[in-house]
Amino acid sequence: MPAPLPPLLTTERLRLRAWLPAADAALVRTLWSERDPRARYRIDADGHPTVAEMEARLAEQLVVTARTGLALLALERRAEGDVIGYCGLIAGQSSAEEPEIAYELLSREHGRGYATEAARAVVHAATTAGLPRLWATVRVWNAPSFRVLEKLGFHDSGRLDPDAERGDTVWMTRDLRGPAVSG
Ligand SMILES: CC(C)(COP(=O)(O)OP(=O)(O)OC[C@H]1O[C@@H](n2cnc3c(N)ncnc32)[C@H](O)[C@@H]1OP(=O)(O)O)[C@@H](O)C(=O)NCCC(=O)NCCS
Image (cartoon, rainbow, N blue to C red; front, side, top):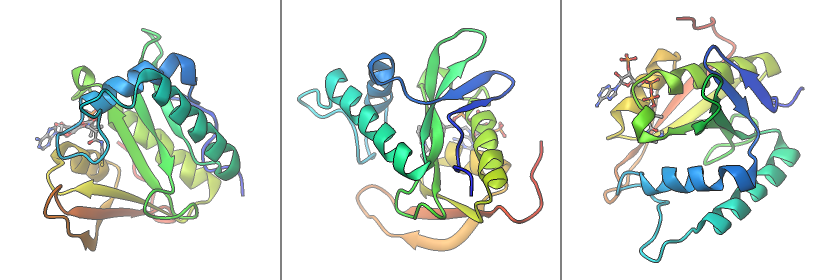
């Protein structure tokens, strides 16, 4: 089976490319700093992870990618040349055979359809690679993420992981052997 995600995907407005740890670390740290207060991983009171620590994390992700073919890809805008977030596949709480789709964008770029555009390319690549199924784990309060997944043909699997502190996690899923989703 080919790798689930090629190192470069191109859409109308975006280039989805492998991390460049030194160049991308500050952007990813900004994403963490903007996260919802209920998110598990955030910048802590002492400022960790620092930019240098984030660079090391991105380098570690590249090692995992070399082993599994699963990757979070930087979203580079083709016209502007800047990086505005990431989208890709991770084993996460699922598995390498049926990975989770994940995405996160700078708050100033929300609502412009970028997550849907990027995630659609990732779903297409996973389908082409022959993966049978994708998952997405979403906190019940994350309406924008549910909407992105709905647009891509995901549905609620019925699995719910309770979490009174951070919000229950809904397991969304999409069978990739089903009919293609367009639009
Ligand atoms: C989830 C996220 C990536 C979406 O990015 P985005 O580029 O704004 O997404 P899109 O513009 O492609 O689509 C968002 C959709 O949600 C809708 N939406 C936004 N806020 C909403 C709300 N409060 N209630 C319902 N729908 C909402 C938008 O209207 C849009 O739908 P539409 O195209 O039908 O109008 C972005 O909100 C984000 O980075 N959030 C923080 C990280 C995160 O939660 N990641 C996912 C973890 S599971």
